Image (cartoon, rainbow, N blue to C red; front, top):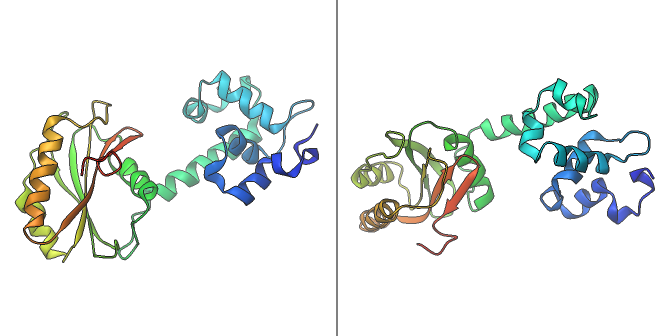
Length: 223
């Protein structure tokens, strides 16, 4: 039965309109991109089959056109999927603009994942904000080796004063692939918080990025 003949509350496009894209499954989002299925198979069932055959969304997106066609996706649907993927990449590649309000952890994690997630060496960055969480500046401050970067809290304080920041998000990547904070990460967070606290600046989070995984000190109760 075509999806258009399903009850409205079960149709992926109507669910997106009513509940938001973030509440749809990978298969439902793909079904919207594909727009239609093939004879006897709905777009949703096709999406579920492709996700199973490719062992997840990332492998499906990374698959070549030829590989995907072998799984029955076809040229038009592959082009639609590539276009949707490219739009997402370009969206994440656009820098956050000064004055943007950053009180949404999802937006912050997506931005940091794009900037730091695939860096080969460790990078320590800071997001400087005013008292209302509006972006003042993003700075990649310290660069290191594959497993460490030397952090100098006084430099963070200096830039915080330069930008007249009140709130700061610390961030760094783990090229090793695990976002779990080390003892050294916790100690750097403590020392930096104390240094910034002396000049009335608050560390509101420390985000560790490992590929597409993020660990938030604030969400984990470590701040």
